[in-house]
Length: 376
Ligand SMILES: Nc1ncnc2c1ncn2[C@@H]1O[C@H](COP(=O)(O)OP(=O)(O)O)[C@@H](O)[C@H]1O
Ligand SMILES: [Mg+2]
Image (cartoon, rainbow, N blue to C red; front, side, top):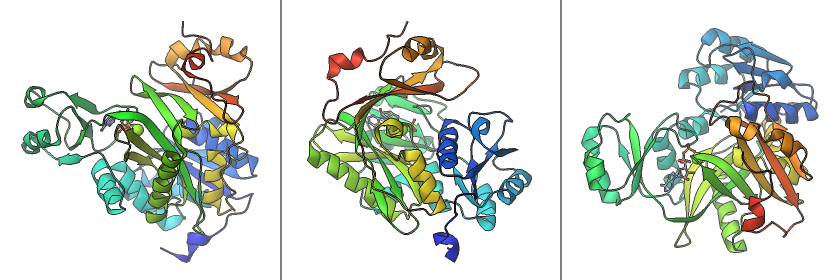
């Protein structure tokens, strides 16, 4: 692109964030810590990020007038929401540096592009096939069962996914929301993720690999570090760093992986933004994922991604978990983060809790159960 690629934006500059959710909120708080102003683009006038930012443009992500107004009010642009349209993104890129750049965003929006590009980067994936319409469906059985169909775009928290147990179930499927990808279901030992950050000068830093457990398709718990052999953790980090370098990332990225039963590490998906599985860094690292992201976007130095403690992160989801907040507030050692969402709908991420332990002293499975007050 242009020489603007290495531009440094000193504290006092305005960082524009596309999207007004909790990732934007925590990014904005990290930016404020370093003396930046944050300007948000969001369709609604109130949102978790707007409440902690200097200013906002209220408008849709593909509205040229809103995008123009947004761009005119910031020095550099980043995002917490990946699904801005290609046209919208091109418009912004003409006006301001966008970090990370457009190519990586386009890849992460589309599972087919993503898998194709990751394979080019030499990364191993779960066996997969493109399913652009009903005619492609019969061939997916070649992957073996069980398999999983996923919409190529706009999936999150397990939405837009269909598990298929056998050939009969496959042939019984109708009215699917094409285009899809089919993936073989991986028999994994655990799910891992790595947060990796890359600066515009090419510096790459990587947080420790962590283990993620899901509940109803939504991240429930992160264990930091992952309880794996050092060799596995290093391999996971090497994969994340390879992707960051290969894609020319500027900013932070979450890389989700399956640690398969046979020991292989298969990349599931990438998210070129702060990620829920990096929230543990807010309490267990001096410089957390959000500050790393802001530093990279602003062109500031990236210190090593050091972890001073082990941590367990619990997500708080929906009204059920919000009912636990008074008890969590009274729990010794629980660091509570709430996103300021006014309505606790089922399945909605409302906040998270970090609990710290000395390095090497993560609790065992039974103690893990008892860390927080139980669900009612
Ligand atoms: N190929 C697969 N094999 C086994 N489990 C899978 C596979 N794909 C997805 N899953 C499970 O579903 C979860 C959500 O899928 P993912 O592709 O990460 O979609 P989302 O965009 O909703 O996060 C994963 O974290 C994992 O638990
Ligand atoms: Mg995922």
